[in-house]
Structure formats: structure tokens, C-alpha cells
Image (cartoon, rainbow over all chains, first blue to last red; front, side, top):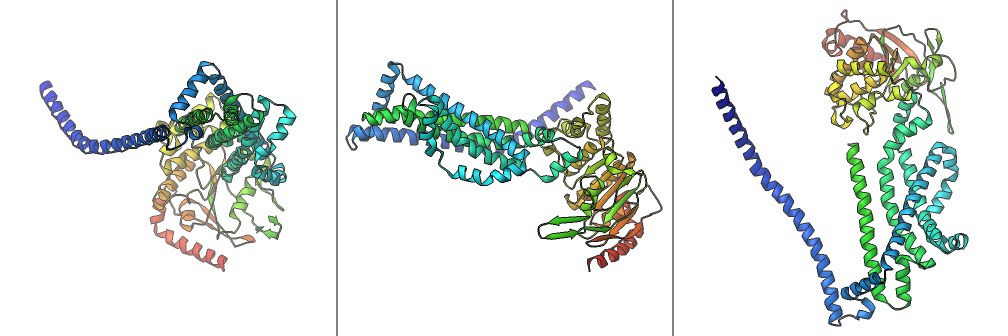
Length: 285
Length: 245
């Protein structure tokens, strides 16, 4: 009896495995196709970068272009090494990163707080609407000289410029998000006799997390603009300073190097926010 | 009830007067735009009528707002919360979340086949299950009267019939009084004991028609197949038709 059962079981198992095998064969081809496409995309991406760098170097070495004006990958690396050796490179990088992170964090937090206040008092929001529109369309870097006068020639001024650039867009996008919530959902909360704080806590906030994160994503980019602009004007430390200084002393290698570093860090920071978004959205679903 | 806008004043409701008995399921039927939702919002105390009053057991409804539960057209479940977090939302807001109420909610989930899905997210449920979760969220607060605002119109026809049976069964088992607003004649007949027909704006109560199939145990779906169904349908159709002229 036992044996028969065992035999039956084995037979079933075999059936099952052949069945899954049939699916797997077809599925494997499909999966392979997907993987191959992915690999091709990554390889092409890397190739473009390698070819660009190689062409740049070759053109400079063969004097097709003037390396004094365009620099070259080798010159960039040399400049990187010399700055690294005198120890100032990481100081500049960390200062710029610090200013950017503080700038966009404060911009996002402050913008969200203001958006909450405006949501809380719809009349205030209506009154201030045209002013927000003007502030939004005004290029905030135009205010930079004034801010440097008010706050002083230093890091706080740079952070304030970065903050100013991101705060208005944050207010507008977060407030729009708040107001897009289905009116019936608010009415549902009203039938529970929820207070405004409770509506905010249980409905508006969780609903707005994706909006907040997309605001954060935009703010990272905007803060870079503010920080570099501020460093151009204040010019003491940071990658923006290196760019301006390199331009003034005709050291284009230094300028190019700073731009390369800037692109790499900006990319990393964006990816970090995107990663956080993925995690949070995943949790939600 | 008069509505004010810059363009002027609109009278939504004129003379609407009716009574609902304990345990009744009544429907308010009217052509679209006749002020049904306005009426519902007055009855649940979210809107203040220009004139008149709503009484609950002889007292002003405003002193009895906890006796009211509300069910919307859409389920309005919060996608970022699990089924459990959704059904206890009202309790949490009213600060009534304790062992006794938790147990009650658990029992409700169990009775209506949702206990297994306690930790699922709404996006993983079918439309009918979502509507049941929404109803349990309302029932968790132990209301005596339920207001249903076209509760099935967001569903496709097939699930509408199924959910209609479901909701009817739940409301009858829990012995709640229910007032449903709808523009769907068949739905009104199949689910309620009395249909109140409103005229077009400014609305009056046109006629009250008691619905009786002679057997209280029929489900809404079975009532639809009953020969008397079409008789009621024709009567109501005529009443509504005139309201549209």
C-alpha cells in the first residue's frame, strides 16, 4: 500500500516536472531575450562613454582640437591627482555636497510646511496665489546678489539661494497634490467627524508621499543650480569655486574636472532619491 | 433647501417629507439632478437645510450623528493601508479602538469572508470585496442608520448584482435601517421595502410606493426574477417619466 502510494507520488512528481519543463523551455527563451536586451542596453551605454572619452583623447593628442581650450581626459586626470595630492579636492567636493543636501532638504521641508499652512487656510491660499505665481516665474538666482548682501559672503548665503530655488516649486507642486485628493474621501473623513489634523495625518500625508518624493527629485536638480550659482558669486570653496577660479586663471583642465565630478555626484544623488522612491512606493503596494 | 451661487439661487428641494421605520430599507428614487445627494447630505448633518428639520427618534439628527453610517458610490479605501487598517480607520479617528471594538471588527470580517484578507492591500481585492470592506469600515462604528449614496453605480453590471445581494444580506443580518439614494429603478425595487419617488427640481415627494413580494427572505437577485418585479417597474417608470417632462 505504502509502496504503491510512493510509486504514484513519484509518477506525479515526474509528470509535474516534465510539465514545468515544457513551460520552462519556452519561458527560458523569453527570459533570455529580456536579459539579452538589457545587456545590450548596458553595453551600448558604456561603449558610448568609452568612445567619447577615447575620441576626446585622440583628438587632443593628435592636435585636431586645441587641448588648452578643450582639455583632455589625461589632463583631467592629472588635474584630479594634483588637487587630490594637495588635499583640497575632497574639501571642495564635500562642501558642495553639504550645501546641496542642506539646500534641498530645507527647501523641501519648508515648502511642505508652507503648503500645509496654505491647505489649512484656503482663503490665505487664494489671496497669495498671484504672488506665488510671480515668485515661481521669477528666476531666483536673480536674487542671489541681494541675498549675499543680506546674509554675508559665505556658506549660509549659498544654502539660502539653493533653498529659495526649490522652495516655491515645492509649495506649488505639494499644494496641487493636496488639492487633487478626491473630495469624497474628505467627505468620508467628515462622516467620521475627523478633525483637520486627523485628515492631514490619515489621508493627506500618506496620499501625498509620492508627490513629495517627486518634488524631492526635482529639488535635487534645482539645488545644484543654486549651489553652483552661489559658489560662482561667493567664490571661496566648492566645485563651483573651482570652475570659476579655473576659468579665471585659464586652467580649463580644472574646469573640466570639476564638471566631470559634478555630473557624477549629481547622478549619484539623483539615483539615491530614485532608490528611496522605489522603496517607498513598493512598501505602499 | 436653497443653494446660493453668484449666478443666483437654486432651489434644490421644496417639500420633502417622509418617515422611516426602524429596520426598514427604503430607496429614494429620482431623475438625475433632482437633489437626491443634497437630501442625503441634509439627513446626515453635513448640510444645514434652509428650512425644515430632520429628526431621529424625535430628536434633532445633529445630536445623533454617531448613529449614522455612510456608504459612498466608490469604496474610497485607502490604497496605502491594509484591509485591517482600513476597517479600523473610523474607530481610530473616533478614539474608540479597544479590545472590544477590535474583536467586533474581527467578527465582522470573519462573518463576511474577509478575515483571510486582513493584511492584504485593497488593490489585491475584487470590486465586490472592496465594497464589503467599505461597508465593514462603516459598520465598525455601530451605526443604527446607513445612508447609501448610489452604492453600486461604480461597479460593472455583473458585480453590481452580486454586491447588491451581499450588501443587502449584511444590512439585514446586522439589523440596520438603511436609506439608499439611487436613479436605478430595478435596484430600488429589488433591495427596498419602500420607494420614495422625487419629482425633478425643486423636488417634492411625488409618491411613496411600498414594495412587497410576500416573502421577506427573497434576495434582491431573486426579486428581480419575480413576476411582480415588472409590475413595480412599470409603475415606477411611469412616475419617473412624468417627473422628467
